[in-house]
Length: 199
Image (cartoon, rainbow, N blue to C red; front, side, top):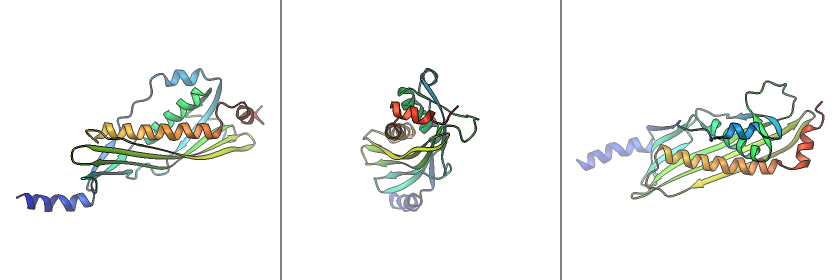
């Protein structure tokens, strides 16, 4: 009986026939207040070029893929972390902005994102990585651009949905912090550059 069950599970596992959907993200408390109190305001556009693709797997015994991982909240997570770190530096990033495209703005492309959960028999290891490419524009054109990544991995009793989301949030937070720092948020020179050419 055990052998028959094993022979049934293994082929399904190898093709990752099952799915895990991460869609329970909650926005950071106080984020809107932080953004609204910022000294500078800047439109933000976050682009997720592959919103419907699988971002990774849950692995049985650390090597057998049993479930493909999807996340509908990746863009929201990245947007939230960018707004937090830019807001902490005095820049309020606004979304759903309808100002002309040639106005100052930050455009961030989600270049890559991976979320995996490894079942290591007695413990599990959720793991995530996020890569962001950001371009900062003023009215005259490109001011600066950066490519930054963040990773997070930890050992836990489980690698279920909440653990995978936590790993993804931590990786996105690290990438967003590095990206805003690389682009120069909070520096006087950067603020002046953004305002150049604006009426």
